[in-house]
Image (tube, rainbow, N blue to C red; front, side):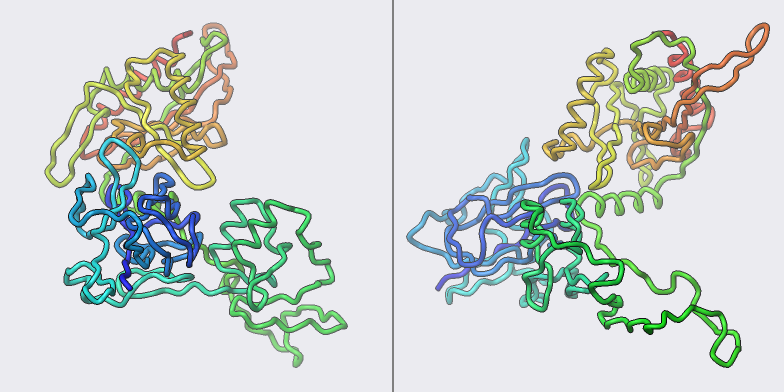
Length: 470
């Protein structure tokens, strides 16, 4: 019996891992070459990974919600020689860098092409990892259901009872995403464990949800360690700061014992944590703030459109902030065009799609482009190519709350503009005071790449443009 191990390929831009969203097959199913095998969530998109062979699925590397490290086992197959297979040495149209994966993106698109590079079929029919030193050292290692591999260590995720409900962290995350109260889901797993299927069934048919536990406590509280917490005495003893002997009792400081379930960061949030840490280590940020007086605006002005136009005006006046900086080689690249990264906040984490050629768009073009980008982010259809390559960034956090900010610059960009929540303030005018509407602005810039004077002139150009009536 010839078997084949399929290792998770690099799904784009050297990402170290991906999260299983949904398997299109289960163990025991037969799949054809290049049919969709599994849907994986990376830091930027949800990608369908095709099968590299035709045959029977013997093993999968993890369930929905599990993190699979690039280059580790994704699936294992029993190859069916009677079905179509990829020819030996056939060019799949892509190349891998280290570590060797089992597939990659085709240039100019988001389609993943399966490859035979993820494993080797031995003469005896057993699958072997690619012949590299690391692969040989980890020949028998792999990611299994309910576990995540990092290097040679496997960190198992076990079902932990919290609030009387036993479930894997991935299942709890799925319940939150689907808006299902996991405490009311009917558990069908072994030992009363709530499974992914239980949560999905509850989301599809809310009538199957159980009644919530009463105040008296239908279930007993379960400590984070899994031990059943002792039931309070029937008399309902009152908590006291002194012992039975009347002496002061020593108690633990608040917060010593966590009451919630630790949640592993995945997908977009996982990548955001890495990017923010990298930016914090590499950038020397400085922030300037001021208020843009928009009292002269006529009705119909689009705030986002005006902010974009003001950034373009600032970039034309002071190109030093519309630039990239290489801190290792100490080189700076000034851009003749203005591509603005628009920060979009979602439940899954922060996306920053690029508004291309903002300096060539009118107000209507900016609004249409921003709406398109937001829609693509919300339905996760945005191409990976549109989530990078911007020359300066904009965070309009004032849509929610806040006045000034110190937003994070993501290299190689030099600057980011943040707009706070608009407000009215009393402004001195000839003969008295008037109530003017203002927008708080913050410009954070990398002080290695530009001077404080350049940043101040950039901000002044923005303020002057925003002061215009239309």
